[in-house]
Amino acid sequence: MTMRLVSVVIPCRNSEGTIARLVMSLLQQQLPEATTLEIIAVDNLSTDGTARVLRSLPIRYVAEQTPGPAAARNAGVRASNGDVIVFLDSDTRPMHPRVLATHLETLDARPDVGISGGAIVHDIEQRSLLAFAENATALFNWHDGLPKRESTFQPAGNLAFRRELFEQIGPMDESLLTLEDFEWNQRAVRAGLKILFNPDAGVYITGRESLPAIMIKFYTWGLNVRSVYLPGRRSQRCWLFPDHPVLFYLNAPLRMLNETWVTMKRWYPVAPVKTILLAPLFLLYRAAWAAGIAVGASRKEGTP
Image 1: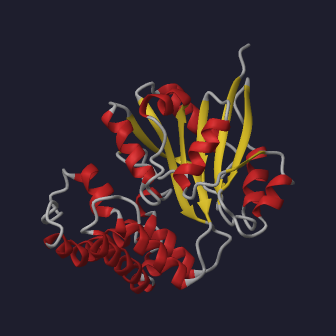
Image 2 (image 1 turned 120 degrees about the vertical axis):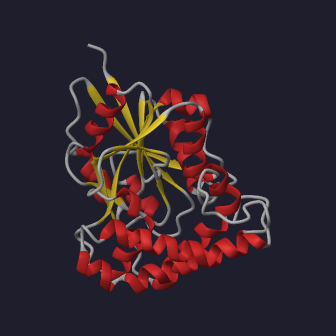
């Protein structure tokens, strides 16, 4: 019987508090018959004890000096040997023992699917409302209460693909420090491949507990909206003056209100009381994102 190898690639930057938990949970995953697992963790310029923790774990340790998740993931893929590669973020953990198996089942059943995606949900063990609101705002399209469906984007915090996809569409763009996974997804779509979201392949994610850190995150995401996100969303007619660097500013307040509304619409059926109480935080985080959109509107390059 031919053995199949699955490679999990994890970019790590200052991840000493969460990476061991993720690795231990991956080692407990129930894999299909004749399937083995390798874990590649890429230390991307950490300044805490991440390197020390990684060297104590049963993983392949890679150090990548080029900053950014794209460079870290690319380095992890280069170091991997798997037929199937799974990207997870270092602050996630599988929701159950068959997350990897569910990704494999999706890819095996659908040759037309290039990327298998799963839910990314705020970690039930983290009580911080700031962190819950961060994850609810950023990941409203990928919570586990949503149906299985074809999608146009799956965040790299939880996705799987066959190695040949990476060879076909190329590595992630290392010039992008944000939205690098969106740009890579769009290349897969343009190549004629499907992205399938299955909530059963879900992970929990730990959020930030510092308000300034969360605001910086959303602001930075906004910087690349016009240069990276919008080209893949030309069909969305709600974007005003997409080709005008000055009038494009008008999108900032409109998108802030729209994305806040969509966030509440997605989460209200799941957690109605919490959704209403946290509406001011959703709006605040989107305001930081909108500020990034306005500042980045005149940029021609995608780098923050």
